[in-house]
Image 1 (cartoon, one colour):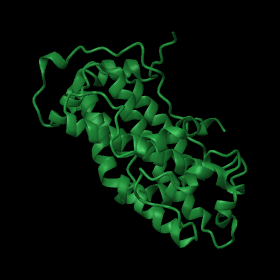
Image 2 (image 1 turned 90 degrees about the vertical axis):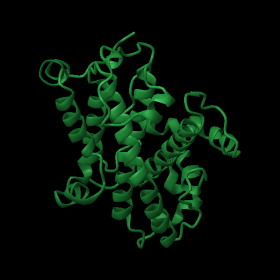
Image 3 (image 1 turned 180 degrees about the vertical axis):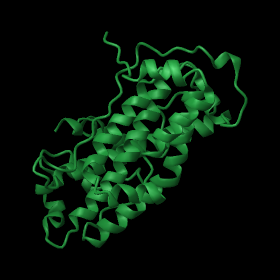
Image 4 (image 1 turned 45 degrees about the horizontal axis):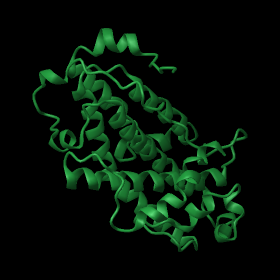
Length: 277
């Protein structure tokens, strides 16, 4: 089985990895790039880098996935930071999406990620924007540029959520109990040093459908796919987080008492295949 490695492996091990302070600063600076808030979020737009944002963040997410961490504290810090970012920005992006789509005559939307809406249903089709339910997307009054901006913000969190699940699976010491107990300011634990990465974890998936085609035009179908992937990732994250906080060290994430799992699983395969369209 092929093992993926980070191209910055030697630099990280020789110059950064042996210092918890330096590794935490490096990790924090990389994670900051995913934020849609305040100065950095505006910088992407003022620099006209929206077209490049998704490929850049995909690359950074791969770096974070494959850096050769030798201390569990670094991995826990990343997961903790992702949880904070998702908590601060996830619901806000959902809310902005719902307001925007409802103002553009796509009323079957809801900030609640457990609800499988009309865009997600359309995203399972080969050409989502040709479906009758998304006729409004093809109207001149539909602000495609604004939709692209919102979807790009959503993609930032999609990549973080994927990284969250990847790191949880890749390192055996990451348990629900440890995540709940983790404090970024806690003293270093001797047992956390020298931990190893599992060899059975699938490769990290950093692929996101691109917002813009090669000629610079906005790809409407891919925007719908980005939206659907975001909702799918947030749905999985919310379910995992609820089980983590309620059940402590119980790692079983199969149950779902609210009845939404059946609705989600019907479309799970199609949603996870969106990046291949």
